[in-house]
Image 1 (cartoon, rainbow, N blue to C red):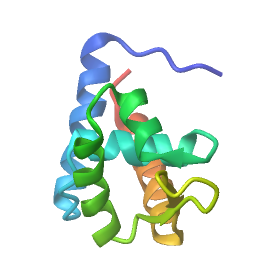
Image 2 (cartoon, helix red, strand yellow):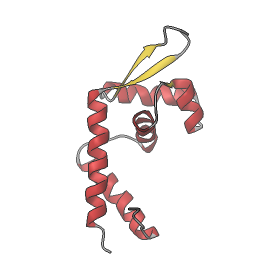
Image 3 (spheres, rainbow, N blue to C red):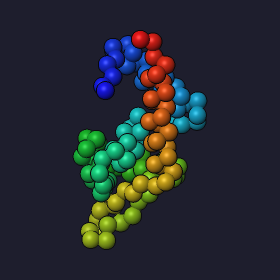
Image 4 (tube, rainbow, N blue to C red):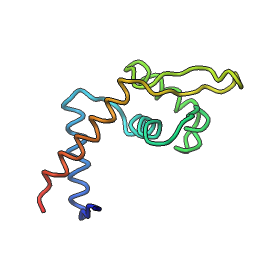
Length: 115
């Protein structure tokens, strides 16, 4: 069943979720979260080139974001054996758990919204 939110409710939900991330020590930028969610919500394979095209940013922007996500063990990278120019982005267990917790947080915050 689809949930219908008014504009202010949507903003409140967005605010509450981001505030929850900050309180939990999550210092990911909106760009990093977008990349992480793209990797986990869209079917693989994911490459630096593909993510750059999808998010309409340069490959160095994706690389910097992946550096941070990699240090946090949310994603990993490996060279494509078929085409060594490509870097394949892979999911990790820690990343999957983080995305699942984010989904849980969004659902919990949504339930708290005044009707």
